[in-house]
Length: 107
Length: 107
DNA sequence: AATCAATTTGCCTATATTACCAAATAGATG
DNA sequence: CATCTATTTGGTAATATAGGCAAATTGATT
Image (cartoon, rainbow over all chains, first blue to last red):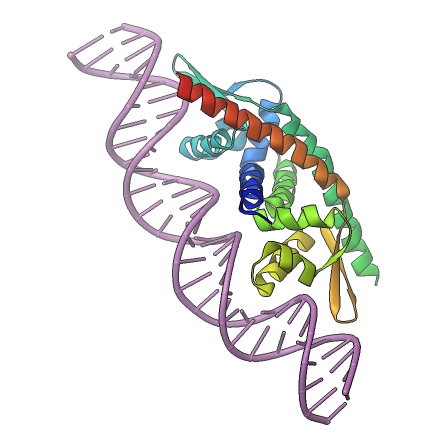
């Protein structure tokens, strides 16, 4: 494992980590439908506006969303929509989890 | 956003979070080639054995890997191979990141 | 220029994560 | 049974993350 390889895994992990929070997932899901202002996202997520803003900045520095200020509002949108493909597989993992839990109960 | 919805995002985030660490990504990548004992993974990752073991337990409780003790060794393998599809999109995000960084320099 | 609205930043506290070491466990072997 | 090997568990310290409040910023409005 070379140093460059390590850096590559580091970079990948940073992207994935940015997605590893429920509020951020909610926002990504909402942004899948189109661009949204911070206020829209706050309504959905339900945290303090400053908290939402910080989550968005995590997504932005990971390269997952980009923003665009128009007037008083800042609009965010997905930069790389393939992110959405993750969810299918994540659901598969959750199903496996459930299955394993059942099996454990039976044994 | 109902409470059940929130729980669903929570569960998804937990799975994704488990992937959000460079060492764990390395291990998943290695396991893509087939099952491996903890010692194999330790060699690749290069951390303390106990650290590697804990990372594996994170992946296991997320439902991403399963393990199997045979003799003195414990073998791990991927439970849900679609995980590997993530990487393509993550690379796309990284490329976008790089492009944005370039654009920022030019402006 | 003063005020208002939307968002971000700074600060602080609580909680979570990571890593290593040392000790415990479990199976194999002499 | 004593011992060796592979792995896990417990303890602990360092660092990172998350959330809210208050203050700062930025653009719009009067």
